[in-house]
Image 1 (cartoon, rainbow, N blue to C red):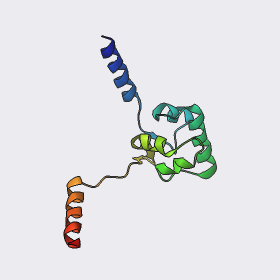
Image 2 (tube, rainbow, N blue to C red):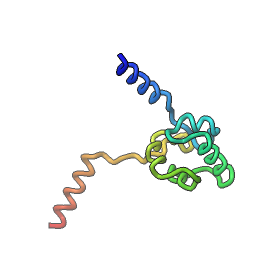
Image 3 (spheres, rainbow, N blue to C red):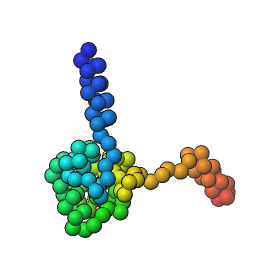
Image 4 (cartoon, rainbow, N blue to C red):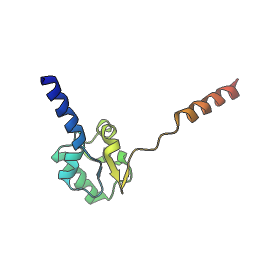
Length: 108
């Protein structure tokens, strides 16, 4: 029974997180939406944005004191910039494999 309760709590916490536009959201919203970002770091994000302008990429958050690459990578799918996710679209795996095979054939 304890395991079931634990799983429910884990599932509920992952459902609560939602994508957030770091260029428009307030610090409280950012801290609630992004993993590993507390209120202090979220306030630093808002301060940086106010002083330097909007973030162009999720990686720009690395310029904010206290925000590192691991935190950005962990949250990339939930970081929005102007209404769209900060995650770059991934190429079709089959197409990528076919292109690599073609390149291997050319090198022989």
